[in-house]
Length: 622
Image 1: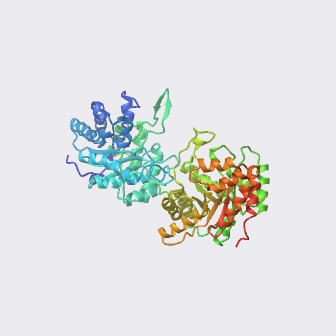
Image 2: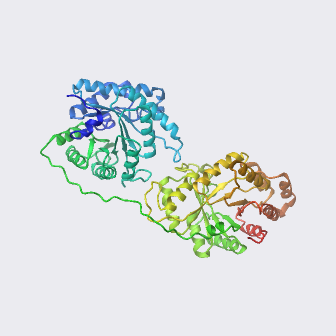
Image 3: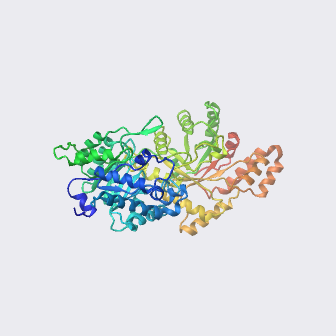
């Protein structure tokens, strides 16, 4: 039988049947789970070839190479980073050997390529350029060895999958590319994308075949396949489910879906429109043999599937009312905000009394820090909500990205908005290593500038990060961090520009004691950008409390320097040092009044009374 070109075979006749799991079968044949399965192409080729041969005898017409994790990043874990080409070429050779031994020359070879195992920016540390280079290295080896197609499979991040697709187009032009996404139990990707959108984006990016693998069992994947097929009906679709959900039985991982169950679903997938069908985790040559028999049985009728209702993003034309802070910033008013730390207990009476003091002194709003210096404290959500409901004062919720994954971030944002907390200060946050729980989780999915963009351009437009509707737009006002006294002013300006592009509404400036640095920053910004800085900056003012406190700030806080004259004043003040710190802060305010749009007062040691005294020095606001 003449072997048709791969894509032509997918378009003609019955669906093409792929193979099943490789790792499951290798493990069942005595290979431990803690070794590199890909390296077995070199050290135990007869075992790998035997698995391929069993799938061919079961009726598989497409065999995947044993190269799922054979990229530089994953192979580095085993010290095999310099064997990428060797392992991938060997993987193709072993499939070719199995095909030759079977005598079935019409079997296709698919070069298996999985994710890199490292998140891409802005949700991880790996750049797109680095990811593409790693994919190109692996795909080039597979293409040079003569695969009929590249199979990109088990990707949870569709951005990474599109980088792999682009790499395949560059490294193996003319070789068909199959793109398989993996979905969670809610039929969404890890970042919240629905199957229809993933299908459209992959098709537009040039995928020859789009589909789904792994995820859950056949039932879930039939839903996802149907959504993808309906989103892009002209596309060739593929599906390769797990054998149900894994269960731990007697210390072993077991999959419960039977061969007969898979046989029935082979017909289901065919009815939905799949042109390539196979299996993933937990499937065996027995599952593939049952699917082969079902597809070849002309007496079996295909099930009927009604068209599913598709979900579209609703058009929302209205937005919520702006906050007091947003109004004042928009009207050019001078704004005064004071930072408060949540209590280390569940009682809030003392904090309420201090907040009343600040409100009466003239503070426009209160900034509520989130676990400052990584110390365990009450949730700032609760503090903001109590202050707003009991005192009616506007608050700014500090929102650090550190220690939060993307799902929690979006849920927390929705919760904040539901509590009418709509002023946010997005910041990286203090590392847990310096706080009460140095071993606590400290990673993050998204950098501050990217989070600002998510809030301003997605959630404030009624969408989540994945572009799915959240029903109604949020109306957050978002602040960013700024250090006008930075040693490398150009670098600080470049970072600020990213935050401006993301949509920042205002900035909270790091406290400084040299107003001339504010002037320097403004001048350099205009030189670099060709226009004055228009972003409202609420400059940090930190009332000094004692000479020791001043020396600590000067010696141990990066980016914060105190002039010798101020240190001398604090030394000479003796027991009157707290009052001298207030006088210094008041003088700094007078010097900066024409350079900033407001003040961000950061009282130390819970001395909110001193912050109230600082506010007294602020001139009549215009």
